[in-house]
Length: 83
Ligand SMILES: [Zn+2]
Ligand SMILES: [Zn+2]
Picture 1 (cartoon, rainbow, N blue to C red):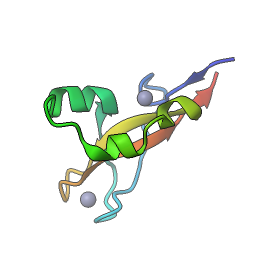
Picture 2: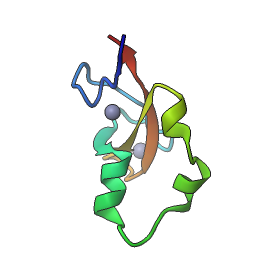
Picture 3: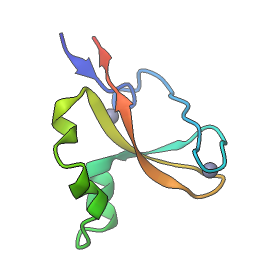
Picture 4: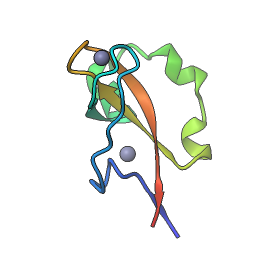
């Protein structure tokens, strides 16, 4: 039994609602780790530290999702599917 992230594996297009302007869909910007590597290699973001360890405990995959309408981008934990 394994768990796989539907976004990483293109199982499905997941439509998440922007929590700012409520438009759909948000655009997947990739996994959180990739995002921070590219975006700010020299400036660790404090929120990552606050959530230290969460990547290990649950079957969830952190993705950065952006809203093309209002420009919001945030980390969403995508629930992984049992396969
Ligand atoms: Zn994923
Ligand atoms: Zn928005």
